[in-house]
Image 1 (tube, helix red, strand yellow):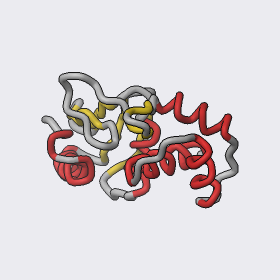
Image 2: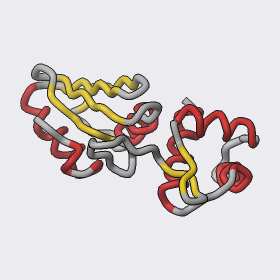
Image 3: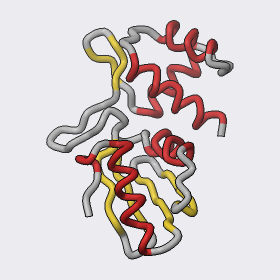
Image 4: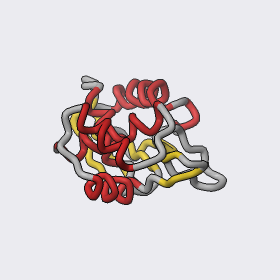
Length: 145
């Protein structure tokens, strides 16, 4: 669980400001209460697929696919009580942490893979509500039905 929180914090740091080296990332994560080393930051960057472009770390971009600043590509329905999210490789866990943090009452639970998120919904009526909330959180371009 702590690793997921650290990954989420790391994603927030690189999306808020340009950071160009791992020592600064490690320092910022330490300030946020995470016990990290340069080596653990390096592993986290690799696991999340974060790349360095123009001197600063950033989320990877897939060609020809709409990707929000959090890496979300799409959310789509699967049956009446399931939503499936697709995102950039390595980001599903961090995105799921953000969804869980919102404590959306209509969501029963979430599961994260590498680039796929499963969201279980209480009932069919709540599915549209959750899709709308995800659209607000991650951008309307990230939601399809």
